[in-house]
Image 1 (tube, helix red, strand yellow):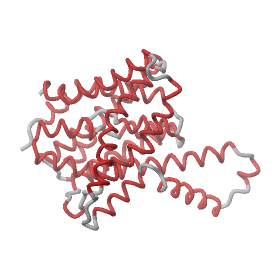
Image 2 (cartoon, helix red, strand yellow):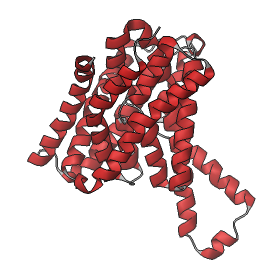
Image 3 (cartoon, helix red, strand yellow):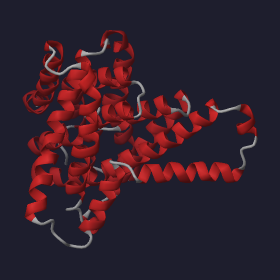
Length: 322
């Protein structure tokens, strides 16, 4: 069991370490981090999301285990906002507490442990994981940005605010959320998939190359940022976030699966998916919205490093599915 977890986590650790070395050596300077973040967020991410979602047929998917998973996500996400307050920082922390590395680590790990049947269950989650979480996080972040801007405005403007103004703010936030490099390609890919059309090879191949570059570059960027930020002062908060993501999240999913009657392999795969470390997309969101960048960088690294122990613990507790 330990060897299977190690085999899945080691490439992720090595890619982050590669970026860290490149940053320390000055091969990639701090000034280039924003450009690399834009490259990943605005080009590679849409290619990956559109290509992945363009092959998903909604009617073929079993969403009961996924419903249990996202009910746990909603509780943890909402709880974080309740404790931290409604602002950009809280939204990014909530995303860190709930967004798993389902692609880079999850697919490899579940494929090794549970084979094709388990992989189908995971891919059902993966097909809507980014759609639901990243779209929801984008809406919350855009609303939080609008809320912060109103708070920073003149008092007289706030006093003149009307319900119509509030509705306009929400409408603008939703528009910004939809016309966004994450939700837009997800929705476009889903719509394309329902037409039964196939992406022409001449278009699909460049998309595939761009999509394949996402994971490695995103993780290398985590390492580069780590090399250029004082992570040491954030290790306590990072450890707290890692514990919430790696342990509390899977415990919530396990409890809700039992409550909703989800058992066997579907439950096991959902719990394992929840126990995965924080995904690199959270780091990209923190970069995009310029909030908690150093803390999220530290949290991704700490969560990934701890995952070797926490995933092993969760796998031992869940056991072999019936």
